[in-house]
Amino acid sequence: MNLTFLKGARRLVERADSGGAIWAPVRAFLLICSWKYGALVSFRNFLYAHVPGMRKRVAAHVLSVGNITVGGSGKTPLVEMYAKMWLRKGRKVAIVSRGYGKTREFAQHAALPEKLQPPDGVRVVSDGSGTVYLSPEESGDEPYLLARRVPEAIVLVSRNRLAACRFAVEKLAVEAVVLDDAFQHLRLYRDEDVVAVDARNPFGNGHLLPRGILREPLTSLRRASRVLITKILPEEADDLSDLAAKLRSTAPDVPVSTTQYVPTHLFTRAEGETLPLEHLNGSKVVAFCGIADPAFFERTLTHLGAHVVHMRRFPDHYPYISADIESVDKNAAENNADAIVTTEKDMVRLPDYISTARPLYAVAVEITIDD
Image 1: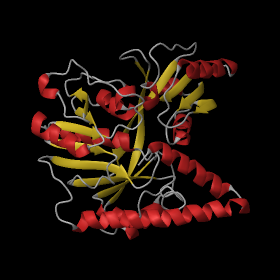
Image 2: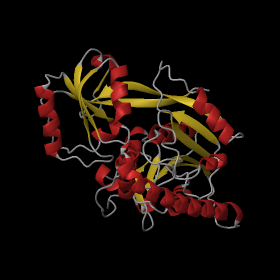
Image 3: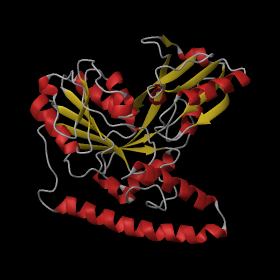
Image 4: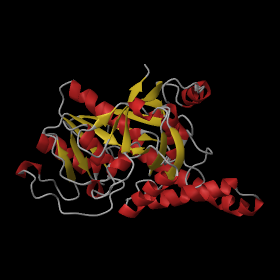
């Protein structure tokens, strides 16, 4: 589904929900559209569940990490975690993504070895040797970040994820595939379906698109192998029992686990330069990000002891230009901030030629499953 449409629909829903009686006709129209959308989704799900031959297999263990809503639910750290898990087991691993967030097309890197030359529509971000062939603008920020974070894995980008998986298995001898954001990609059979659910905003207003943020009915969780409740920081006292109970009543046979996002260190734009998290404790910082859930990032910084004097929010997958960072740097000077802080995803999207008067850090995070 078109990412721009989803963002626009989400903003319209938020405005309709917060508006008064004047927005009632808009809410009613969106509700009717969501009924029609729901009927189409249910019919599609029925076909894939009952018509033989519609789902295609590849000769590898396929694990999907996805969600049931639009917006960020913390899938990327989970993809990284599962890829590393298979690597520790000695398997050759590929990560396959659709490549949301890329801002320009390209000709595949001429330096690719002959055996890595992919079919049309499939792009090689990295080859498992540590070499990254594409920029964030060409691959999307998340695939690029995964290629950097998991250098031993092959990272591929394609709208046709079946073609990408076949290339990985048949040409590159991949034994395990981790699919990024593929719960709704029913064409490709998978051995495991992991679904991430945001602890703070699990289902929005409970409606399907475009009236709400649900991509499909909650009952679709029954086809998951495991549901992971995400966006939980260490030592937080959020009561998740009600959410866990709702998930278990919706999908009684599906295990439900909680996760924790664990910040690990800070890093700078200089290759390999890292700092301990304690560097932020007590510091005044200006933060910026272009992610689906900027409030969670601000919450993370507060948890680390930083005093966020200003938070600049950009659209999800925002393609930064130098003027954006100059504006943030100016704001940091006006607030007498000690540093500027952003996320890993945002750091890889920054132009190469930018510089700031204040130190610029990104927060690296890992995810753990509680059980």
